[in-house]
Amino acid sequence: MTGARVSSGTAGAAAPARRVAAMVLRYWYLLRGSWPRLLELAYWPTVQMLVWGLLTTHLRGDSDWIAQAAGVLIGAVLLWDVLFRGQLGVSISFLEEMWSRNLGQLFVSPLRPREWIVALMTMSLIRTLIGVVPAALLAAPLFGFNALTMGVPLAAFFANLLVCGWWIALVVTSLILRYGLGAESLAWALVFLLAPIACVYYPVDVLPAPFQWLALALPPAHVFEGMRGVLFGEGFSMAHFAWAAGLNALYMAAAGVFFLRSFDHARRHGALLQQGE
Image (cartoon, rainbow, N blue to C red; front, top):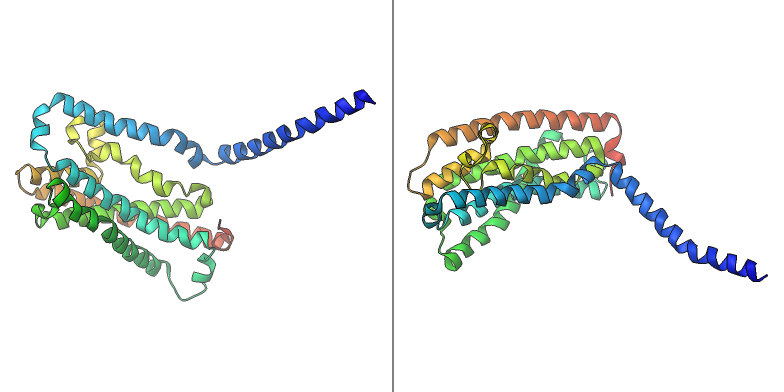
């Protein structure tokens, strides 16, 4: 009898551990089955290390740049936020429809995918202005940086980064339509993949030579190079503006086609009605 009680007590004590182990195993299977979640674990530390490592390398090799760059870093932060919020404005509005399981209801109405894209972009513009304008206004009294000193080029920088955020968001939403909400972390992660090669805080020539070509194949690098040129008194570079606008037009067209095909794939496979939290 005593042995039976001991055995029963041991089994009872082990039960919570087994339940904990079962739940850990469940979450491990979820993590292992989602490549975006696995990628995210190493992604953020790596991106942060690359961005700040490259900035440190640049400052270490060009101490004169620090004295000249009074407002450049603040300007870079503000413009980077335009890109980030422009992308997030589209992605979050899209995800809100998925979280509420509302995609099916939307598209039994006469709403067309192209019209929805325009609505998402309009909402993105509103969200971006609400987020960035107060920060820009505070930068003047707190840090002596007035973004309006960039003049007309500021509108060109803003427009290019906003459009860049839009086509990145269309890529993100297309991937979510194809792979489900397991890929929703891309709404925050994908734009930061560009951060090391967008040259937000340092010139393109800081990058290793092969990556310089990659950076110049993306619109943000041209925008931030143009911003630094204006703030350093070198004038507005039409070449950088033309490259940024042309690349944005190309990538926007490709992202639009990708989105429409992903949407059609989701519609044909019934995913619009199945996806949700």
